Image (cartoon, rainbow, N blue to C red; front, side):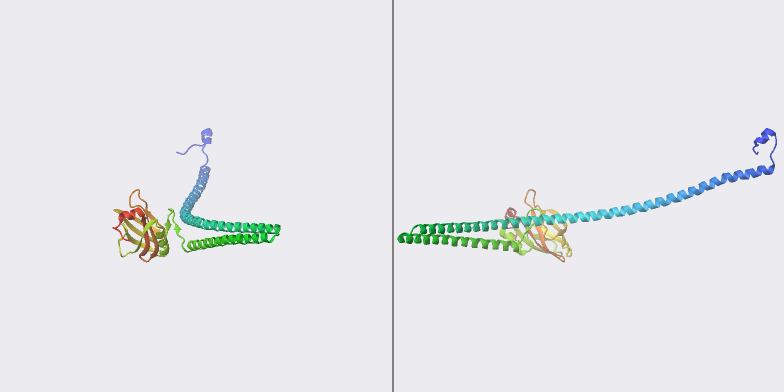
Length: 310
């Protein structure tokens, strides 16, 4: 049943049928436009939200990738910084040892030079004194005696100068030998404070110092386990380009594995608790082959004889 209008209720009249239909149509159109506009705006908002969500996800993925790359770059930079710190410490230790050795010889040379200068000054003072004495004494006998005394004193001073020249020459020879020794054999100081040999000549120098016992080795990958002193060594991998290697060890009954080791870098381990550490150094890395030496404490080597051979 259609609702009655206000005119129908008040006047008891019915509006014309045509006008009532037109008003209904116009009312329906007025109500339809806001709905269409709202639906259109809602669709645009939904599309915008989907685009923003997609863009945010793409930005998040890019940020995550950038963060991972930055972390990798940071790890590489930290590793390089550690390598630089290690090289700086080694160079600083070598420089301190060299400076100390050269400083001692320079002090001896300076002392010899100062002694020669002092003797020369004393000679000049004595000659001046003798000449003044000669000038004061005019008699022939006194003059002859003074001349003899002068000759004797000058001879004594000349002998002292000759002795000092010999000492200076000896000191200079020692300085030359020290410089040649420092220039020819520069033993590397490890991060543990021990000296490392990088070739046979330096290994002979370490043996001459007698601080440890040294056992050379030449191990190939095909040879499997090799006995060196009282430990067993097996080569598992070599990288000639990067000069790195991987090895497995048996220290007593205890297995060890060391990977990505660099040449001329000591690998320290203990044969037993509380004992001084062993040091294993590889000087050459070849395809499936390593050459180097094992350094063990003197007391440990003495206890193991004659069960081991050099």
